[in-house]
Image (cartoon, rainbow, N blue to C red; front, side, top):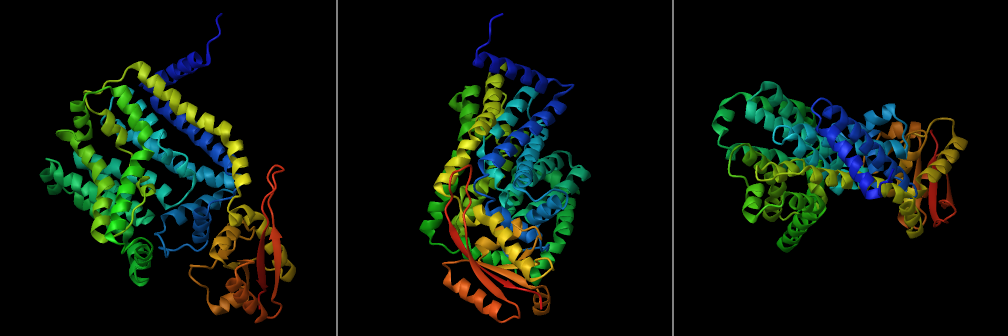
Length: 507
């Protein structure tokens, strides 16, 4: 028997996978199994490749928010923090479990995209559509950094799916679900206003708008969405719309030239992120320029509705940025790509051969496998370059802080203050699961005195260290010390960083 070459073996395996995915009797089970494998491979990649650097600051900041659950926060609405709180109520707070949670977001979004595509594509195109999405870095590399953008991926996908179903069927259930989805999007990040505005534009442009707006569907969507948003709206009013002020301070009121530059960067960067699926789709489609125009902007019907629902949320931010002088970044387009494969493949002029599907599936499976093999080397490269100290040292630093704390008192550590860059990391790593105080709601003076706190600063931050020393000296039993932390990784030496720690025991 002749041995197969690696390419022949890969092609045969891809053929078996394609057959299973296109089998009407078992395609749903096969997709769920394939997505489970996708989730596992990328979680393993994240756990290994990032093992030398610790958790990203965005991730530890959300852990800090989750320790102080609220209907809103200074920077963002509460969905991400609520998900993290729920996840770590049942899962251990470890790097691997956090990466598992992070990868659940794009995996769920992929499953929703698979379900959505059934309304517009035949089974062969649905398989390729799902595969194309996995070639977008937002669905793997960037998704491993759990933050408010990652959270938007499944809720934008679900809201788009439910809205399109609601629009075409005027079904009350889909209308209500669209309202819940819209509220979830806004509770994830206010950027979602562009999705909601884009879907509204899609409804207005479509020729069936009269029947839609005369039905109960849109009004049910609005009513359910407002009810679901009511607690957060109440919080916003009673906190002087703090997140809007933060957003304007960081991204707003920029010179027009800066806004233009950021818009161009947003468009170019976003298209760069999806370059691979675009190239693959254009190669396998092999269409003329006339057909390409029909792909980008179909003439009418459901395909025009889908095109508008895709383009409007993607392009509306550029109009807003130019009008208001705000800056954009291409990373914010992260949740906007659910409909891209439908747009690329739904034209009747686009035909796919079985061989095309097999080749796309080979690429889809090869990417995570190759990256998993490369993960240990990536971790070693990061260690040589020097990871962010606060993240890499967080666990060791937390051990030292809790050791000093429990030498002073038998009570658990409840609060950590100091430099926000370190505090969030330490709070996430500490066994006692303390609350972080920087840029968070402050406990009363009585509660703070009764519970005590630890303060941690970079040793070369004179202002932070002076404030910590002053606070420690003002309480009975207060103490402070300086310590050097170094984290080696598989015999590769790390860089030493010194930290100043103050212990203010309960009074």
